[in-house]
Length: 481
Image (cartoon, rainbow, N blue to C red; front, top):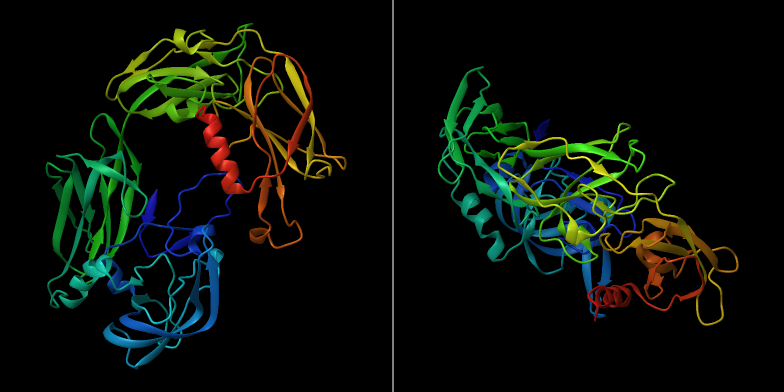
């Protein structure tokens, strides 16, 4: 895998109900935009066509966004006019126009009139400059101090460039770009391939950092070999375009290469294909096992799985603990080797870099399918046609529906689950189905807890909650309040 660290962006079509962590720079970016890593100023400045400090004085369009508390704020979008205060690169006039987007899909940066900004702009000529939320464009405040220190104290010409970075394994913490922070690994050899075909090498220090200085301008390839017990997560190699006085940052993520493998078999000793196998922390408890899941895999046609890479620790291994198997038959949740009860699960210890094999799980007799029937209403009397009804395993992450159906013209639904399984059942629908997607809004029923000891009939779901209220009610119920 080769990672090109140019300033870039990508837009994601986010499925409904999928919790995704986004780089929320402006209201527009939070809806559909996710950025690659943010390069440091010394790497970004050489790539930018223009860099300046300016005050927003006008724009082609304005948009007002209202937050959940009902407070509105108006933004300048589209073509933004700036009064230039300080130029670092590429601007000669006192007034400049910069193109930005107007909605979340185009990653446009939304500005506030009268405010001062540090702008990184890109384009082939001064009249065609653009910026977006994935650049280092930002308001002038304490957070812009790093950029301003570099821009106002740039190295003299001829000093060359530098490549620096860190080699480490991800921690539970997050950095400002919503990537896992790294716990550094010392003594790892890092090699750069230079434009003149030469190679230079160094090793990481005690905190996992490395640096190459006084490099000639050109394209460099940075790589390393994972030390014993680790596997490279990202990237395998890194390509950097180094400029005089500039830099390139290259972090490498390594993961402990522990692994566990085996097969999943049914009560007759035959393989179960396309089923989910989960590795949980040994501290797992309760119904909501998803929060304890460390890693997962799906069985192949032979029922085989391998979960990797896995850090050292104590774990529980199980089949169909969180999501239903992709098979018409319902299999009961089963912990290694044959336990149906969490309290009887065998604790497995995986040491650093250890590969455990032969951890087979035999699943007891399949459970019977059961049906839940009911009606969804807009209010106490009006049936809701084409509403979604979701049946979610209690062990599944919020708010994933393992089964999903739509109501008929009379608001009726029938949805299948497994006998003995515990579920959350709820309905949702568009408030304004004829509006553009992001303006439709959603209305929900209160979630109902069900355990299928047979078929259930006569359930009534009323769509009377907005999204915020639904999440609050759901959270209280999940916590047993």
